[in-house]
Amino acid sequence: METLQRLDEASPDQCRLTLKPKTIPEDAWRVPLRLLKYKTLESTNTTAYQLGERGSPEWTVVVADTQTKGRGRNKNKWESVKGGLWFSILLKPRISSAKLSILQFLAANATRQALEDETRLKIQLKWPNDLVTNRGKLGGILVESKTTVDKVAFAVIGIGINVNQRQDALPKGAVSLLRETRTRYERLRLLRAVVHATASRLNDLDNPSSIMKEWWHNCIHRPFLVQITGQNETVSGITRSIDEEGALVLETDDHNVRRISEGTLRLLDDQSG
Ligand code: BT5
Image (cartoon, rainbow, N blue to C red; front, side):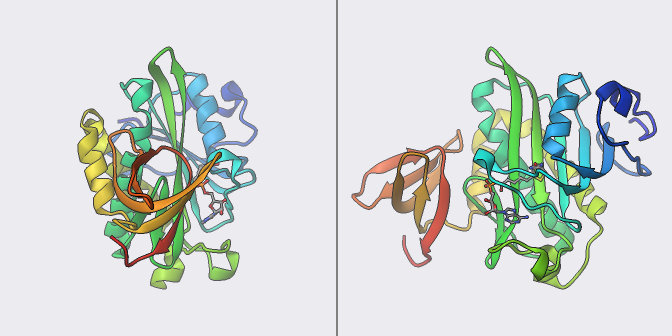
C-alpha cells in the first residue's frame, strides 16, 4: 500500500492541474489508493479522466469540496455545493467495452450498501443511476471511460452524494443525509466506506447477473408503473427487471416487453404490478 505523500505521478505540475492537490493522512485504506483532495474543481470526473490519460494508476481517487461544472448524464448539471461528497475513482477494469455499463450498477450497489451501513438510513436505487430515499434523490453516479477497440483503457466512476447540506442548499427533489437522519457525517469516512465496498465487489464484474440481482433487489420501482423519457420517445409500463447489460425490462401498456437502455425514469404509481 502506498502512502498518500507519494503522489509524484499525480503532481500538479506534471498533470497540469490548475489546483494543488491536498493530501490527507492515510489509515486503513484497503486498496493502493492515491487520494487527491481539492477545494474546488470543475468536475472530479474531468480531473480523474485527465489523470487516466496521463497514465495514473487505478485507485487514484479525486475528491473536491465543491465543483463548478459538476455534471450528470447528457450534459445535465450536477449541483455541487460545499457539504456534499463529490468524488471520482479511476479504475482499469479488465472487461470488454460492451460490459462497461455494468460498472455503473456495481458502483450503485457499493455506494448504497456503504451509505446504509454508515448511516442506517434505508437507501434505494432508481434506474439507471440514482440513489434515492422515499423522499427524494440523495445521489447519482456517472461512469465515463476511454476505450480502445473493444478494450477499456480506463474508467472513471463519478459519485455524488448529498451529505451535510441543509434543505435550502439542495436542488428541488433532492435530499441529503443530514436532512434524512438529522446527523452530520464525516465525508472522508463515507468515501472510504464506498471505496471498500467497490473494491470488494470488483470480482463480480465477471458475474453480471449477481450485480444486477443485487441492484434489482434494492430498486425502488420493483415492479411499479413508470414513465421513461428518452431522447426520441416516452414510454410507460411496469418495470419487470433489468437485464445483464443494465437495460430496463418494461412491460408496456399494450403488454409488450421492451428493453430500454437509456432515459429518465419517473414513478407514476406505487400500487401496480
Ligand atoms: C446523475 O446524473 O445523477 C449523476 C451525477 C454524478 C455526479 C458526480 S459528482 C462527482 C463526479 N463529478 C461530476 O462532474 N459528476 C460526478 P443524472 O441522472 O443526469 O441526474 C442529473 C439531475 O439530477 C439534474 O438534472 C438535476 O435534476 C438533479 N440534480 C442535480 N444536482 C443534484 C444534487 N446535488 N442532488 C440531487 N439531484 C441533483
